[in-house]
Image 1 (cartoon, rainbow, N blue to C red):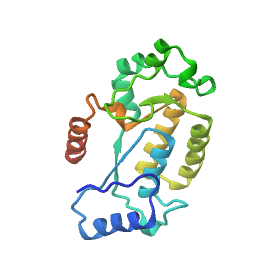
Image 2: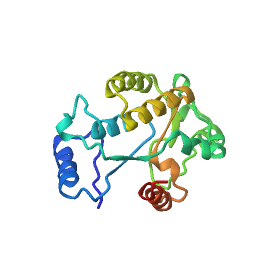
Image 3: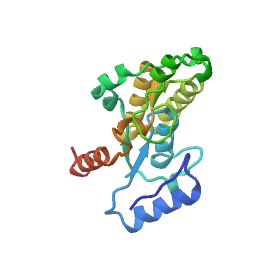
Image 4: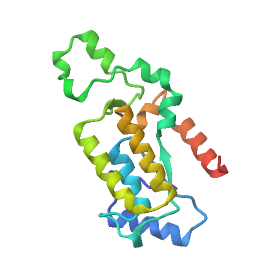
Length: 187
């Protein structure tokens, strides 16, 4: 079963997740999110108490299915192929030469989307720092520790990645099958 929520969770979506959690506890719940501060914050809202979601609507058993720093490092050669512009030096596409435009618009996905890999903006950095401050109150929760680590790595690398970056032909099926299989087997 799949539930598609766009953006930050609302109370109806959180209520549905709780319904599944309590009535069908044998069904694993995954959150598929981009590797950016907002994607990690969305996971935090579902998994941990937050300013949007009270503890009554969190689902501690939710697992994170999405890009992590390890995925970026494993595909380092694909990262090298991309020219990631600095957020301070971004130019509108029409001001670039056709050759520059093609090089910076490398898209792995066959669907239209934002750049699959891009530099963190000032806003992204501020959001990440804000999340890190909130995670301090989460104690020793494994997911909170992992989120904090991933946010710190993201800040050091200075990049964010869309889910579409993982696909090779407009289809994430193989990657999802592998990751979900590993998670279900406890690998």
